[in-house]
Length: 315
Image (cartoon, rainbow, N blue to C red; front, side, top):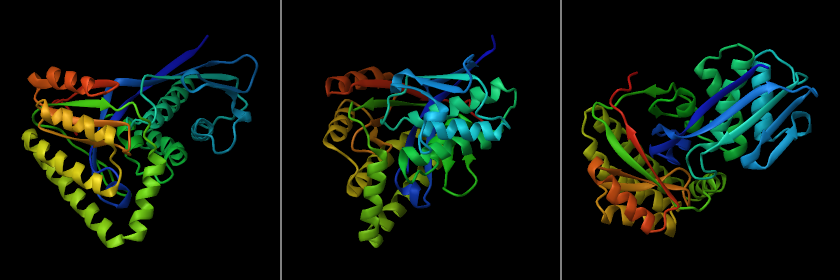
């Protein structure tokens, strides 16, 4: 029996969340310590059966409503691959990426499904096409998505991203270490994006200034990474966090972990993703990672992931 399995990593936004929705740049990197996987095999009963045990999903594609994200990505991939929904397939999806935590779980699941279907039908897809197909499901997950999640996950490399422009990959000339602390609180990205939009509509001048300040921080962060000066990222993270709090997307849980990280030796910390829950990130020296990680757990983090941004990545 032919069985094809594909995977996709999580992601974390370093700088620029929310402002990226309004045409400002963001920086994001893949996080391969967490993964989504999709397995495709023959289904003797006909039709396409989709199983996602982590999501409590076990349905036939034909039964899913038009706006169901798994249905959207499967149907879109089939069209792209020149296949029909009549094929007898079973698609099983699993993920170690926490849901609604800012780590790109939805985009990773979508990307893994597209890759697995492409592999099953032996029709390789360009990275841009994989990203585009995953983006269609992102619209359901997030309402007005920036495109960051599907882009960095599909390309699996650090990305400097400006919406509606060609993405740019880049490399660090010196490796650096990040800790990702999970608040354990679901991050309602669609809600926070919508709330920021309503606030922007009510006070456009104020929010345009906030977005411009975030953009300048993001540009300086990229320059620091490319120049091999990651220590400069700490103060930039702290300033970005102040701006995100002013937008109204921080929370007591995030602030508690951010403060615990700073007190225990992190050189900078901020929320990552939609906010009001989900994850925060901290820039740490490698030798301080264990101490800061322990402090985050003591402060209430449900989990802490260490990820290293390598200097080996190239454009």
